[in-house]
Image 1 (cartoon, rainbow, N blue to C red):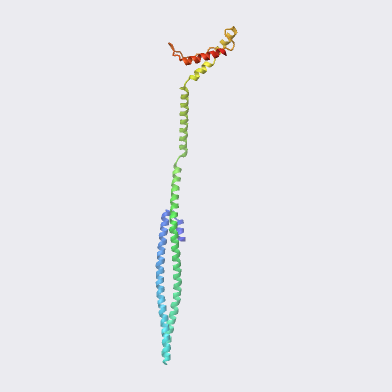
Image 2 (image 1 turned 180 degrees about the vertical axis):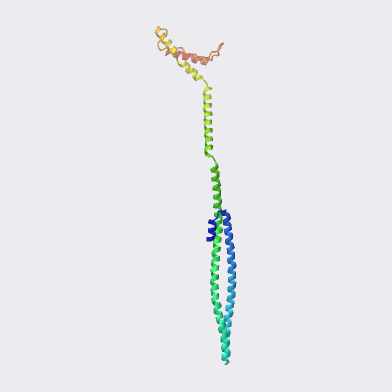
Length: 249
C-alpha cells in the first residue's frame, strides 16, 4: 500500500487512470498471494501425510519389538527398536517442519485477507476520488474560461449603452415638452404684464381715465384668424361672467 501511495504522489498523470491502475495492481498481487498460499497449503498437506506415516511406522515397529521380545527374540526386538527410533526421529523432524509451515500459512492467509480488505476499501474510495478529480478538472476549466474573459471591456460596453439609453430618454422627454399643448403657456402670457403695460396703467391712473386697481387690457396671444371665428355660447357666457367679476375687482 505504501508503494502504491508513493507511486501516486510521485506522478503527474491522470488521477483516474492512476486509481484504476492501482486497483489492477493490487488485484494482481492478491492473485499471486492466493496462488502462493495454495502452494504452501499443498506442501503443508504433504508434510502432514508424511508426519502421520512416520508416526504410524514408529508405533508399528515398537509393537513388533514387543512381539519379538515376548517370543524370546531379543536381537530381533533390538532391530525393531532401531527401526522404530529412525521413524520416530523422522516424525519429530516432520513435526518441526509442519509447525513452521503452519506459521507461514497463517501469515499468508492473514496478509491475503488484509489485502482483500484494502482492495475493497480502494474500490469504494475509487469512485469518490474519481468524482473529486472530475470536479477539480471542471473547476479548472471554468477558472480558465473566466480568466480569458475581459470583464473590464464588457462592463465598459454596458456603461456606454446605459449612457446612450439615458441620452435617448432625455431627448424624448425634451421633444415631448416642445410638442405638448401650449394652452397653459398662452394663458400665462395673458395673465402676465409687460413693463409697457404697467407704464400705461400708471399713466391712466394719473390722468384719471381708469380707476386705481382696474385690470389692464390683456396681451394678445399672437394668433389671429381672418373672417368670423366660431363662438361657443357656453364659452362666451363664461367669458362674460369673468369680465363682470373683473369689473367688480
